Length: 439
Image (cartoon, rainbow, N blue to C red; front, side, top):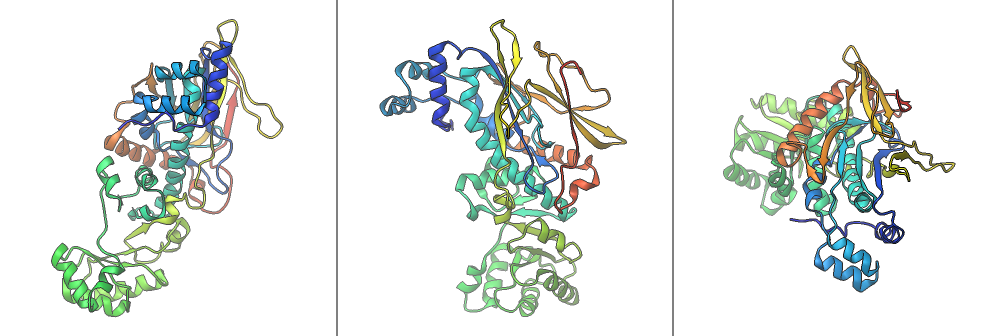
């Protein structure tokens, strides 16, 4: 299914109209996507959404209906409509591969093309990366706090229907083991999870009838929700009906730590020693960390995950950092206002490591000819994604892309210093060093 190029802001097309009129639309430009700062208290961010962007970019077009609407509404003039009729992105894109961690100033995505090509992408790029990176960054804090126990995404009912699919995908990039969202499961090959809600228990005349019906339909390996009425009594009924092979019980309210200890004792006493305990109920990374000592086997997270755990956007911006001068060479440009100063010139990124632990991010400004000096012993962070409008990043999209990104995130997070896992407020876990052109 194609994506309309109208997923953009009006000013991008009015800028294009003016640039077509004065002859600057064809100037080669470089735009970078970066965060000026991390959300308050975060130690690192997680790149997510790149695969979704690469799925739509090659076929991004203005349809006949789009063009007719633009002309009818007078958004741009006839010359611009004619230009947009054959518009497509034919430039190059490089960036941090999905699942990589980033810091303030990190060039997550670098877009190279004419102004007419690159300016149209701004809103779509930021819409995808800001949402998905915010969710993945929150999810990474949650999976780190869970310390190996599975985290399950259950937030579909707390956000827009398509945002729910994107959020499930972003959560998987940062280590979530499954999702309740079937569309995400189908689209990206994610394991889907879920059995019943309180409504199913309330549908029946009593809890015994509800549990018996669920076990009969789904088998004894199912997960029974045991806090509709009395938890202790429900655990007794659950094991009596399903037997000691009952798969799991779910707790969705109350003092989860205290309940988990009590339920574990009851399950073990009934011989259901392999029955797992999963907890839900408005969890976030702090609640997960607080349950570290409790006998909890998995966590179901909803609202906090799909809203970025209080930070629903990653705060990424899309800024021009270089453009073609009159001599035909690229020259660095940047905003220089008092409160939002930029760094001119495209940047190459490396991560320095000491004994396998990351110690700094190094950004090297390119020469006008695109050359940079490498950083000896450091790991390069950027990879080619699109060349001449064609996706060249193999295995970056679909289910394969999600799996690759999840493995990459595991590796990238593992090399961060221990301070990266702290949930208390603090600065970015790595310093960033900027090196001028030529190293």
